[in-house]
Length: 418
Ligand SMILES: *[C@@H]1O[C@H](CO)[C@@H](O)[C@H](O)[C@H]1NC(C)=O
Image (cartoon, rainbow, N blue to C red; front, side):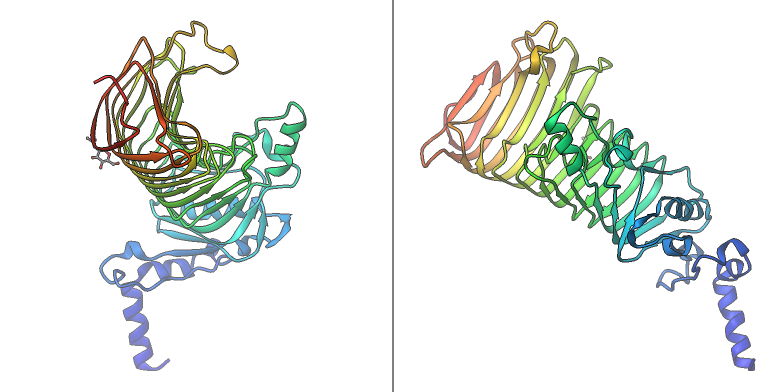
């Protein structure tokens, strides 16, 4: 070693102490471990990252060998590392059985970089009994970049169509987690809901692509419940059920730049079916959406049960409707299969709902429906700059127990009790 090389080595080791630590740590030898240079590296050792390739844990990208143990082992190394790590999934197909990525982790900066496709087993029964195919639980600080999830749901949908079958598993669930970014993930053909976010905080999803056949049952795109600070931006949904559905106790939700169709629209609800611990959905903004050929545009739906709660401060801002059956709908008398014991309207109070700048075509004669509860009429509804047509004619607005105001341009013009 020349003197200048020695000097360089000493310099590097003083700048990046972790890099030496890892070269002598035997558990890391099987993983490809290295440090990545970045501009912030000089000021912070926390940007020293561990690089973990699932292939080094035995994952095969042939779509046939079970890669579940390899993924879980890779996760355990990342989760137990005190420095941030990148779990890398190279191109190819990886067969995964139901699996759970568990926290609490020792660092709050794990990156899952997925260049490959994760596929569920062809035999739906291997997944259908689980709550979800892939679960992230108790995680704080995770980024998922890219990746395709193929839930192989078609086998289960066929089963559902022919006889009584399992409800099926969601493809991807985030439970009790926070500070998560998901960017550029595609989910196709989930058995039921594609993605659920439950009891989470501060999750941001961008550039998502969600696909399932228009006739596939219960394949909601993203379902959110018991969560706060969720953001969904610039994403495409083509599903057999709601593109996005919003469940109880959701607050501070921001949804923007969405394409939806086919599908059942963007829905708050159904609320008030079972939980009677107070149902609240508050401060929800849904902005810049294109709906094409969907059953609904913006929907709020509550069961006709005695359960109390509220839906408040909801802003539907900007939508283009293309052949949407119910562009705007509130249904507080929802009661499929006569399942509601008293059946006299919901007790969930809907108030301060703004619909602004909504244009396009309705595929039914009644473009706006406000079917509010006699027990809790809708209060403080606002309609502003609405221009909807039905077969080049002015459509209807149907309203009951609905109180609100109209501003700006309004077609159909007669809506609400003022
Ligand atoms: C409403 O939610 C947004 C995020 O969607 C947040 O920035 C804002 O502070 C919230 N407003 C209130 C009053 O909590």
